[in-house]
Length: 363
Image (cartoon, rainbow, N blue to C red; front, top):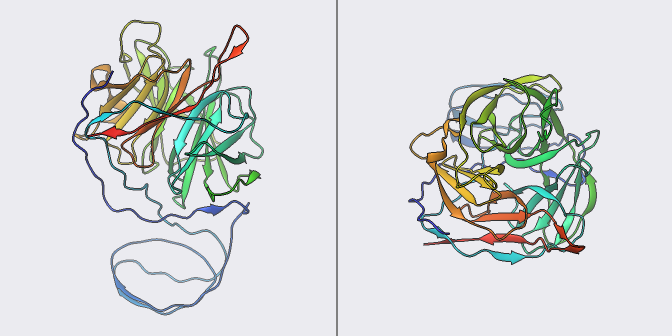
């Protein structure tokens, strides 16, 4: 079923962020000279090796010499929103057997033609890079991380603002008994989509553990605000689903508390297939996408509706993918289309195919 989408809302300026090369596993240093003139305002701190000359007008000044990390101020890319309807999804077969129980997917915030995915519980702590034509590119391992139940994946600036991160939500809790859950922010490496890269370790991973106010619940839909100021979580129940919010600043390895912001009834009809099992927030922050086993639903946040203040009536149905057990969804690199994928399902000894599904916007 297709429903009319609302008029596109565009966002402001795209700034370039830092992308860590696949070969890197730490921090780098460099030298250089330069001259320049400019006007502007801003404050910031950073350390590095180098020398240079320049003139400018603005607020804030500083000098220093040494090695270290600076604030690059990565901003999510400007992407369109769909002003029409989503067309019939096209199938894209993933050319690799490792991605079998997908529960998280996101379009790369820095590299065109690249998707990141992860499997559900039972897999190691790793992400998979897949080209949008289905070619398997490689595996990104999260060193020193034990995966308990990875359930969703988002893209946003890193907690230190320096470059883009993939935010992995280890929040699944089928028995509602985990004392604490966690989100891992993984600095995105540079990927050449023209060639496979094998298996590499992530160079920087933040471990952000937390509890949920009101007690443990099972969560499978998670988004990160485009400025990385908060993580928002949606409980996997039909009615009275709790919405929690974990606010920055984030402190590594210190258990924080995600506050309870409210409850909502999952959109859709009936009871059996309405559970929220995936979510994505548009890079503009103006559209919130939820998926259930039944369909994909979207809320327009362009008039100031808060991500953590939505109700079931704020959503309209945009697509019903033909997937046996779909649990992953994201906006595509254009922003106006969506990607979905099902977990691999076996029926009577026969394993059903689980291709990527790509639905593009039709004006």
